[in-house]
Amino acid sequence: MRIVVVNAYRRENAGDAALEASLLAQLAATFPGADLVVAGMEDPAVDPSFEGVPNIGSIRRASADEHASRAHRMWHKAVAAVIAAVPHPERARWLRRVTAPEVFAQVDAIAQADLVVSLGGGYLTAPGTVSGTINIATQLLPIHLAHKLGKPVVFAPQSIGPFGTARQGALVARVLARTDLVLIREEVSMELLERLGVPPTVLQRGVDSAFTFTADRPTPWRRELGFADHDVVTGITARQWLEPAGQERFERALAATADRGSARGHQVLLVPHCTSPFGRGADDDRVSERRIRAFATSDHVMLLDRVIDYRDLKVLYGEIDQLIGTRFHSVIFALTAMTPCIAIEYEHKTGGIMRDLGLGSWVVPIEQVTTTRLTDLFDRLLAEHGEYRDHLEQVIPRYLARAHDAPEAMRAAYARRLAAERDAPELDRIPS
Image 1 (tube, helix red, strand yellow):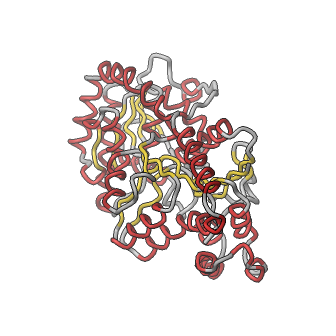
Image 2: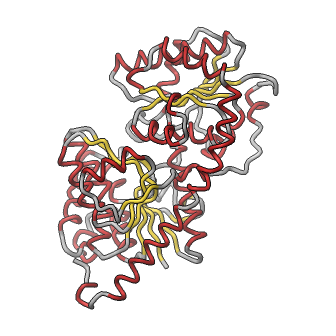
Image 3: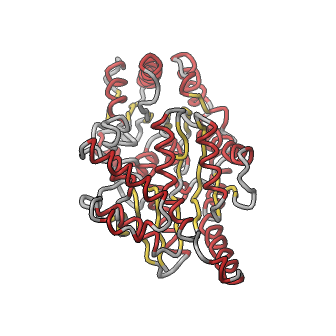
C-alpha cells in the first residue's frame, strides 16, 4: 500500500512538524507495512526525509521557492494551472522536460497512491486578495489531482477559514465535498463548512494531532539556561501578524507582561516556536521577539535567539511554569505538559479548541491585546494557577483519548471507499 501525505510545511515550524510526526506515526501504525511519502514545502535536495519518511517536494514548493527567480516561480504557477486543467497530467511528457523534478515527483506519487492524506493544520484560509485565492488553489491542487485520478482522500484534523471572499469559500467547499473524510478540529470550522454546503457525511469532529505528539528527550533545559530548579519560569511566544501600529501595541503589551513577571521574581523566556525562512523572515518568530526584548526593561527577560528542534521545544514547554502563547501549538505543547496558559488568538482555531477544553476565559484576540488586559489576565493566571492545573489534570487525558481516534476514522473512510468501488459498476470506477 502507498500513502502520500500532502500539504506538509517545514520542520522549523514546531507545530507543523509535530502534526507531521504524529500523523506519520499514526499512519504507520494504522496501515502496517504501508510505503509512506511526504510531499511538502521542504526542498528534497536539502531535506530528503522527515522522521525517516522520504520527502519528494511539491508543486507548491517549486512555485513558491524564494531562492529561485521570479520567472521560475511564475512559470511553475502556470504549470500548476495546466496540471489542474488537463485530464491526464501524469501523461504530460512535454511538461516533465521543462519543470523542476519535484513537480512530477508529486504528480507520479499521487498517481501511484492508494490513499492521499492532507496534513492537519489551518492552511485553508486566506484574505480576500488575488494572492490569497492563489494560495488556497495551490493548497487544494494535490487534492484536486487525487480526485481527478480517482484516489481516496482524507484530511487529518483541520481548521477551515475564514475566507476573504465568497469565491474562496465556494472553491474549498467544492473540493472538500468530493473528499472521503475531513476531520474538523473545532466547532467554528464545522459550522462554516455546513453553511457552505459540504455534505455532513464527509465531515467528522476530530482533535488536533499535536495533542498526541511526544518527545522522549532528556533535554536539561533549566541547567542549559542557567535557571535553578526553584526558579519560576514564564514562557512567551509571539509572531508577526498585525499591521505595524497593531503589531507594536501587541509587542509592547507582551514586553510589559514580561516585566510584570520579572518584577515578581520570575525568569521570563521568549521562545521562538517557528523559525521558518519562508516568507522572507515573516514566519520567523525571532523577528518579533527581538523587538519585545528591546521593549522590555528587565534584565531577567531572555530570548532564545536560535533555531530549536521541535522535539526539544516540546520538552521545554514542560519545564516552564506558565505560558503566554501566541503560536497555538506552543499552547498545545504546554497544555499537554499540564502547564497553564494564556492563549492569544490570531485564528479561530485558538478560541475553538480552548473552549473545547473549558479554557475559553483564557483567550485574548490578538487585535484586542493591550498592556492592561494582558497584565490583568496574567495576574489572574498566577492567582488561579493551582485550580488551572487541576482542571488540566481532568480534561487533558480525555481530550488526548479523542485525539487517538483520528487514524481509525481514516482507516474506516478508506475501507468504505474500497467497498464502494468494489460494488460499483465497472464504468463508475473510471477516474473522471
